[in-house]
Image (cartoon, rainbow, N blue to C red; front, top):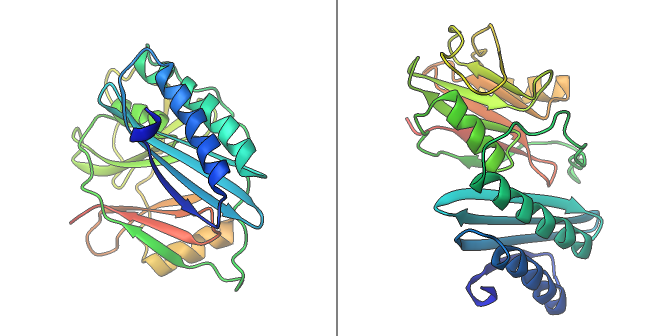
Length: 239
């Protein structure tokens, strides 16, 4: 398994640290009672800490695990343990994740002191039920997941927030989904129509971790979020 793992490293990481981390991730995958394939590790070491991420396919289902720590050794320990738990979760009966979640490290302030959008993702949004979107949210360790709701034919998001731990918001407000097995709360309002510049201003002014809004011309859903380098990322579905 260790030979089949792809590793991307940034920040001058020593070879012995990479080898130790690879071994820990391989052991977690090999000990699973499931087929674990396409393992990909991404490591980033900065002056303020370390970020370790694993993407994989478990019995054909995509998962992602991400851990931040003071150093890579600590990040790898947490990553391997979380990988074991995630594999167990996606191969067993789905259960809501505990809420509230453990606090995550705050994004640093960029050296220049001004946050800007430095990465734009334009995926083809999946058409799926809100229940299926929540399962993807959990499997991929996302804080927010953008998709298209076939019941309303509108872009929507599910995200982690109280009191139940899961909330649904749409670009156009609609009734709650039928026969949902997820403890969802529903945003009663349509997403605000904002330009990307307006969205950045709103996210910064309210100190939000992410922001769901609609493009003012197309009405398509977009998600602005804080990256681990302190800048911002944007997810906008393909037209």
